[in-house]
Amino acid sequence: MADLSVHIKDLLLKNPVLTASGTFGYGEEYADFMPLEALGGMVVKGTTGLHREGNDYPRMAETPSGMLNAVGLQNNGVDYFCNTIYPRIKTVDTHIFVNVSGSTIEEYIEVAEKINTLEKIPGIELNISCPNVKEGGMAFGTSCTSAEAVIKAVRKAYNKLLIVKLSPNVTDIAEFARIAEAQGAEAVSLVNTFLGMAIDAESQQALLSTITGGLSGPAIKPIALRMVWQCYKAVNIPVIGMGGIMNAVDAIEFLLAGSAAVQIGTANFIDPRVTLKVIQGIEEYLDRKNIPSVKELTGSLKENR
Image (cartoon, rainbow, N blue to C red; front, side, top):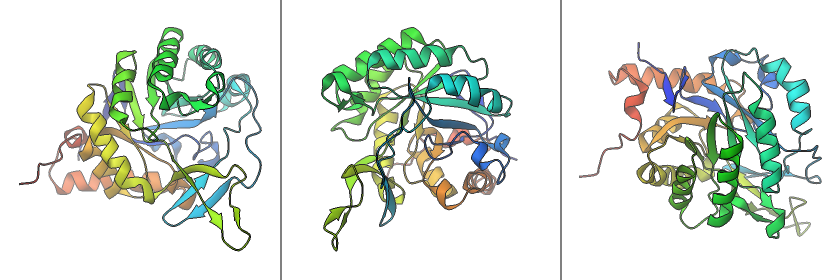
C-alpha cells in the first residue's frame, strides 16, 4: 500500500488532502458525514479581529461550472474562536489551520498573536486577499508592497507554520510566491477565488448584492493548475494547490503540477464526503501505477516530446 503522508516544512500530514477555508466551516458541520480524522488537515473559516456580519444577501450565485460568493468573511471574531470553537475542535485527530484575515496590518497581527497561543493549532493560512482599508480597499495580495509588508509583520508575530494564501487576481502570481518565501512563509496556498460577476437578464440586476464576487469551482481549474505550476517552479517552499478540485483525478493533476498537498473547497457543498473519495482515489492511483509514495507525484509532470 502506498505511503500517502506528506510534509509541509516540518509538519507531517497523514495524507495530502485538506479542506479549503470557507467551505467546511469548523469541521463540526461535516462530522455527521465523515470521520474528520481521515483528513490530512482542515483549514477553518476566515477569522478576523472582531465579529463580522458579512455582506448583505444575496451573496451566493450559481454559474456554469462554478459558483460566485460574496459572503464577506462572516465570523464571530478571533476571541470567539479561541474561547468557544477551539475547545470543541482541538481534540480532532488531524491538523487544524486557521485562515487569518484582516483589513489592516494591525488586525492581522492581533489575530495571529492570539492564534499563536493555541497549542493544537500548528499553523495559520494568511489570507492576503482581504481589502486593505488604509489603501482604499485594494487587496493586500494584489500589491507587492502591501503583500510584503503584511507577511513580514505576521511572520514576526507568529512563530509556527505560516502558509500564505495567494490571490490569482494579479498579473504574475509567481512574483507574489517569491515575496512570500522571502518574507519567511513556509508554504503558499493557491489559488483563491477569481473576481467575477453574474447578471439576471430579466430583472436586469446583478445576482450578488456586492455586484462582484469570488468565482470558484470547476471553471477555474485550468487557470489554477497553470498558476500552481508557475509557483512550483518559482519557489523552494511547498505549494498547496486548490481551485476546482472535484475528484481524485483533479487532485492528482494538481500534484503533478507541483502541489505538495491540495485543498478541496466548492466540491464539499455538492458531496460532503468528497474528501474521503479523493483520498481513496489517490491511493488507488498510486497502487495502480506502482508508485510507493504520493510525494513522488509532486512536480513530476512530464515534458511533451
